[in-house]
Image 1 (cartoon, rainbow, N blue to C red):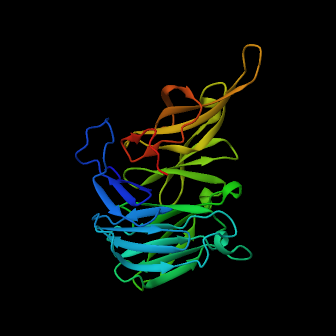
Image 2: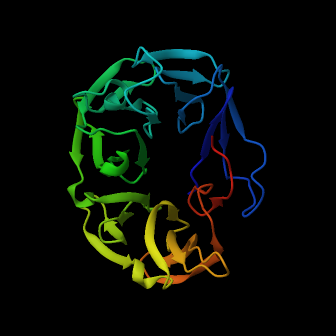
Image 3: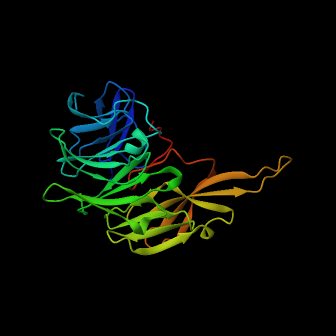
Amino acid sequence: MLRDLVTSKDGEIAVYTFTNRSLPGVLGDPDIKFPVPDRPESSAISHDRMLAAYVTPTTLRCINRRGEVLWHYQFADRPEGYMGYVAEPEFSLDGRVLWLYRPDCGIWGGNHTDKLLAINASTGAVISQVDLRSTGHGARFLAHPNNPFVLLDVGEGQDGSPLYMFYLDEAESIQLARCHWCEGHRLLDLSLDGARCVSVDEMHNRAVLHSLPDGQTLGAIGVDEFDQDACYIEAYPGGYLDANLAIINVRGESEGSGESGIDEEWNQLVLIDAHTMKVIRPIGPPNAGCGGLVFTWQWIVCGFRTY
């Protein structure tokens, strides 16, 4: 199963599907375009690809293929907040609900904490909301058809990345739990079957394989199992290629040579066994950075600007 790649730029939300694309190959033109009058900060599409939602610094809008605004929800009254923030939308798998991560701390500062909202995707009415008690700059949603729950990964910068698991119950109330098994970790990716995930344990400098939904540790790989000059396992980019393979990004430092003697920092993508968490081989040569990779399961979009 390949995830659609959704990108935003001035005047357009672009959707790339992988049903008829040869892999590997050139990404080419998007399959679907949603016209927008401005530049979205984040966006999402419904799973039938008929609707899109996007946010600006103040407003969430839901649009159709023609770019017509079906409804909007204003969550801030000023374009600049207390600190840098990006709200994040995501459609439920059945298309009935539009989830919204609202970074209230970033917007208002003070004692405000972030909120998670369930919004009726047809009308824009708020169905339910909960206080996350986080102070994030942004977030991402991870969902899978096999799972009754959705994961929400909130980025708090240097303070960490709390992970939440939630669903909307029959009474249309959000049921939320913080994944304490992921404290001190940053979520890397969700497996293709939705039964496992990989996180990066920054305190112990290792990548960890967990079962879902209980978070039990199934395996781990430490930084010492990579190149001898490797210093850190990075939380981004990285992810599953297929059911058996995953990619980890490792950062290292080599002693400088020549007259300058300046140490050289590098990044190395490494292919690992997604079941045993063992190194298979490096992918390509070390380079200065890997920030342009986007994982869509079974394929990596390389060097693609998403901003």
